[in-house]
Image 1 (cartoon, helix red, strand yellow):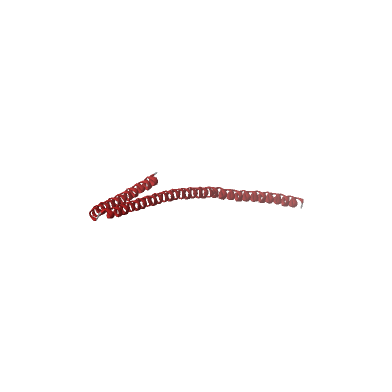
Image 2 (cartoon, rainbow, N blue to C red):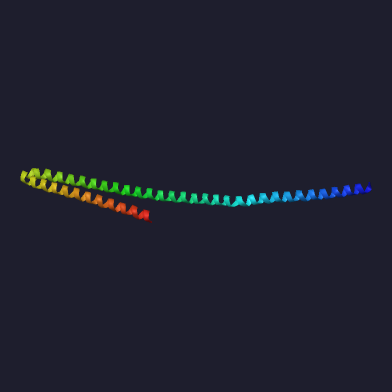
Length: 152
């Protein structure tokens, strides 16, 4: 009986030791699996952060380019309106001067009035051609600035 109890105690000790080793091995394997999953997840998170940073940089660049383009368009529109205003002012001054000369010529005689009228009409045509030429030159210059701004 003492020998049976001793064998029983030895078997219990061996089974407990085997169970303890098995539990320790399984726990170590579980911890290793969790660590591997964490290590595999980190590069994905880093890649996501890198993609988010690249998206932010692209958004900022697009916003900057659109802002510059808007400023260029505003400058072109402002220059075009300034040109139109100066052309209208010049045409009004020319018309006022021509009307004054016509009134003075009408007082002096009809032959001179016809000559002045012809000169005024010729001057008006020249002024209209000059305004149209300046408008086209301004338009071409503005387009050149826009293209240069977009290239740089």
